[in-house]
Length: 95
Image (cartoon, helix red, strand yellow):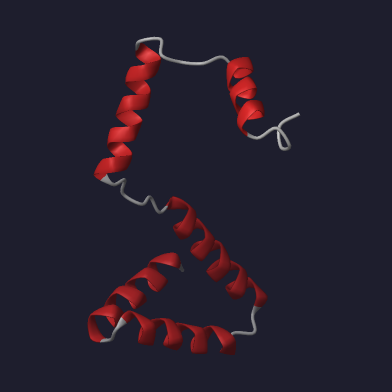
């Protein structure tokens, strides 16, 4: 079922713009009355979305690398130190 959906969408996207494909899919989906098909479509969409990984920007990659370097070189704070800093900065939020 999911291969059918993927192939259908890929083919239609080549022929139409994305918004038109989504509208056409919604129109077809609204005609479905079989609960098992609806469940399959829902689960396929949910799985595809959860498996989708968005690429990191160069800035995000750099921030991760800096964080890993900080850990490697002992530039870290204990949870107590973090709580103290947060309490000083946000006294009404952190008790």
